[in-house]
Image (cartoon, rainbow, N blue to C red; front, side):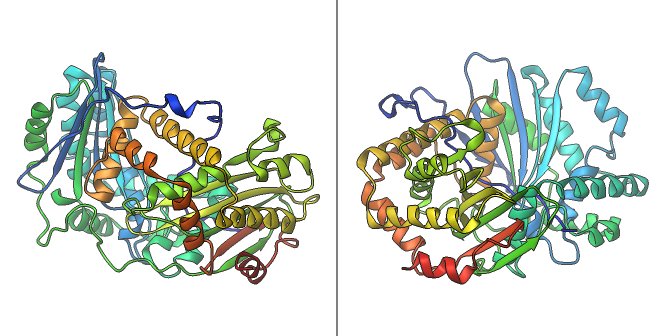
Length: 469
């Protein structure tokens, strides 16, 4: 059959926010992020939130699957699985009991660029949370028996990911777009690597990448910054600093090269066909980052199952809703990394009823509409309002805020407050969006992946020609 290549992260927003008035979206009275840096280079960032007795504490490491090579791809994710299996100070049972006894929650995840461990706890248990995070991150015993057990677990996880067609498509999209480059690798790694990763590979990865200058300890909620700095020094002070530290947000290697490619996977058993179409997008710190998101918001998302679109301000949504032969759903996306990105559309069509070329034509028509300037000021203001509302709603709770702080500092070296973000979004004009679309959507490489009944999926040559027409 087909292989999933791993999990991807996408910036998808704006669904269901169209009724918000853009004149009322504000970000007043939000707390500020305070940062400090320990002697070993570890950054401590915190944001105190009012009227709460709980906190989220997380450690963000500037390493993920793009820090791996072809032989050890999957190591960062493998380490995430082993983190909770015992340390030099605590057994697996000890970790679980210690967390359970104080009512805390402990979790972790790996992405292409980051490894994250975080705990949600009561205010008085913050020191214990920082202690446990430091312990599992820097003192894991990497027990050989646990390695073999988790090897089987990860293989099963890979098999489950293989059934998530959007994950399959987006991972193939990364693979062909960033061919033979770190961003093209997957998070779980290929099965052959999962089966062959050794304890020495895991140890080497920790020694190479788990250094103080690549870590950010974040605390949000009922957090006192000075106290958090003290806890960081006590529990993370032993972590060494790289011999040649690179500031957070700075390139760690050659800039990724976007390759226009296509991959069609005929799979007759699937009732739906899944297609991803992408151009080169923007990095987290790109000056046109928010312009890309506003353009994405103008296009928006649509799903036939929700029964919307006829009265939508989006011409693409109207076309999709009034023509049952176009598609089941579409989603605009913007995926950003430290130094690159993907921007485009993800479609789900009926494998038997839909001619994919028709919806592709409508998408290209929508892109041309934006390029030509046939968008209204009202559309631009609506997109900006939806973007601001979505960004603000994504900061609901201490865990979400911690995630935002950690991700921003690790990938850009700083954290923009909601006020600063809103200021940048408010400055975007209709002309900015038109210029962005003409730069990104004209005479540029395109990548496409299709999975399912791909017989009616047009060629990349057809798409490129119609884009540039």
